Structures are given as C-alpha cells and as structure tokens.
Length: 326
Ligand code: WQD
Image 1 (cartoon, rainbow, N blue to C red):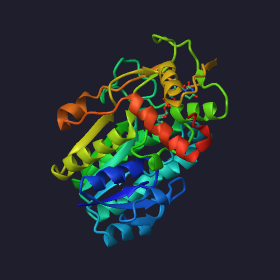
Image 2: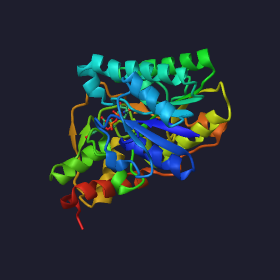
Image 3: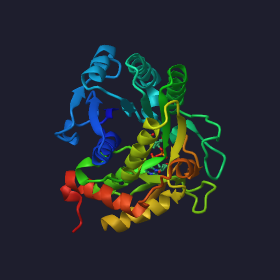
Image 4: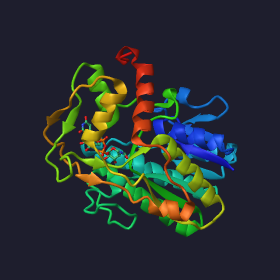
C-alpha cells in the first residue's frame, strides 16, 4: 500500500512517516509547509507541497502516487489560537478535511486514518476517559476535531471506506533529536524554554482537586503514538468497512509538578518551579483508558515520561546548544 500522510513534515507527522516506512509501508508526504519542515521528510519519501484545501492538487497527488490509504494529520492545533481565530480553525480543520474526503472518496481510496485529540472530551468528570465518555469540547480546536470525526465516519459509512479516529492524549518526546517538536506550546518545551532563559518553570495553578494540587495528564511518547498509527493502518487494510475510535495514551496520570521535577533532573538545572494562577480552561485531570486499543489491536505504549523528557531534551539542546548544562 502507499499512504498519503498529510502533515507529514510536522512534528507528529514526521514520526508517523518514519514508523510507517520502517515497517515497510510506502509513504508520500502532503504538506503545505506552513509549520512543517521539509528537512524532516526522508530523501526517499516524495514530498508534495500543497494545502488540503486545494482539491485539484490533492486529487492529482492521489492519482500520481497510486495512493491506497490516507493518514490525515495536517491541521491547526493550538487551543488558545483557536479561541481567537475560530473561523480559521474551522476552515483549515473542517473544510480542509471535507475537501480532502471528497477527493479521497472520488478516488475510492479504501482506508482513512484521522488524527483526533483528547480535546474532544473537554473537561471529563471521570478517572479514566474511555471512548464512550461524552464528548464536550471546550475550544474551537476541540470542536473541529470532533466535527472531523463525524465527517470521516459519515464518509466511511456512505462509501465503505475503512476509517479510524485516533484521539491523542498529551504527546511528548522525540524518536531522534532532529525530529523533536520545534514549537513551544506544551508543558515540556515550555519548561525547557524557561530554564534555558534562566527562569523558573511555571506551574499554572496548584489548587486543583488532585493529589499534589497540580493538573494531571496522560503523556504519550511520540514514537509510541507513531507505532499506534502503523498498527491501526494495518488493521484498516485488512478489514474494509471498519470504523474505529481509539484513545492513544498510556492510562497513567502524571502531575505537572512531577513532570517539572523530572525536567529539572534530566536537564540538570534543578530550579524550583513558581506557581502562577490557573490557566483558564484547564481541566484538573485527563487520563485515558488505553484498554480498547490494547484489547482490539494488541497495541500498548512502551516508553515512560523519563524517556519522553530525555529525548525531548536532546532535541532541544540540538537547536539551543547554549542550554546544555554539561
Ligand atoms: C499540560 C499541563 C497546563 C505549561 C493541550 C491541548 C490538547 C493537546 C495537547 C492537541 C496543563 C500545565 C503547561 C506550563 C503548566 N493538543 N502547564 N506550565 O493543555 O493538557 O493539552 O495540548 O491536540 O488538546 O488541550 O497541554 O502541554 O499545554 O499543558 O503548568 O508552563 O501543564 O496548565 O495542566 P494540555 P499542555
């Protein structure tokens, strides 16, 4: 099979490309390079520069490369920005997906894997979030991911295309330093940035109803996440008509304070965090039940938060060599 991987030049997408090709699948990257980086795409993988909103370009890529499956990661992903620019997010994430699906179904591509997010759940009131937990997104970003799942599922039902929506929890780490996240919009890189600047990492609120008062999340290594894509892609190939919705997490909650303690240990900075007021809209606890994908497909994560932070730090130091302590 040949997989078109939209967003394949991005942080997560490049990991998916690597995992897919290492598993012997053929990959073609489709990316507008708005945030993606061409250098992340291996030389032997074709890179088509284009937007998913460009129906003709998508159709040509599908035909020219004989695409038999799509992994769709191209999207805007910043929660705060989505609140400021909701129409932009709906255009890129929902209209872009609709255009892509029109081309994909017209070309009768049999498999479609959609990158969704734990943001679809909003503020879940349960210890472990299952795929049956009600979806009540709190941001336009989360709304576009939920609407995206509906589009994908409906298109699959109408055409027989096998589909999957993977709900990623908090992604961190890198499979190689050059593939590390270059954005600074999540806890681990934000803590690295503060330490590199000689400042204390910040904890956004320590008065949550959690064991240490700080928010609890389910962190997943991007290499594990990428492997999950390989497993799911193969499951779609062998089961036409499938419709999967799967959490991708470890099922283990880690608090912000624990994460920052580990960041301090890994980096050698050892600078105690400062506590600031809560960031509006942050749920106290979001931890996946990882049972469904384990039971149905036999997949589970291999790496822990130590691996995530250590590998992310190697990537950070590659770009910011002055940050290294020894
Ligand atoms: C994690 C925790 C912060 C920085 C978001 C999206 C989610 C997904 C991943 C895309 C929170 C706290 C952070 C800091 C802190 N994105 N924090 N100090 O908000 O759980 O999830 O990104 O799909 O959909 O909502 O991730 O990494 O921003 O924050 O205390 O300097 O760390 O308050 O509790 P979040 P995050």
